[in-house]
Length: 94
Picture (tube, helix red, strand yellow):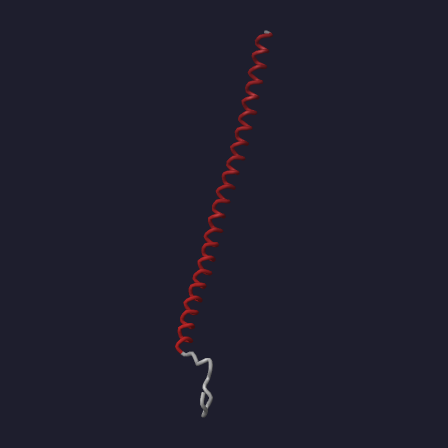
C-alpha cells in the first residue's frame, strides 16, 4: 500500500515537473519568436533607412554634378566675352 502511494506521488511529481518544463519551453519559444520578429523588423527598417540615405546622397551628388557643369559652361562663356582689364582711353595715346 505504501509503495503504491509512493509511486502515485512520484507519478504526480513527474507529471507536474513535465508540465512545468513544457510551460517554460512554450514561454521561451514565444519570447524567442518575439526577439526574432524584432530583429527582422530592425533589419528591414535599417534597409529602408539606408535606401533613403543613398537616394538623398545620390540627389546631392547629382545636384553637385549639374552645378559643376553649369559652372564650367558659365566660365567658358565668360572667357569668350571678357573685356580688357586696362581699357584704352578715348581719343588719346596709350
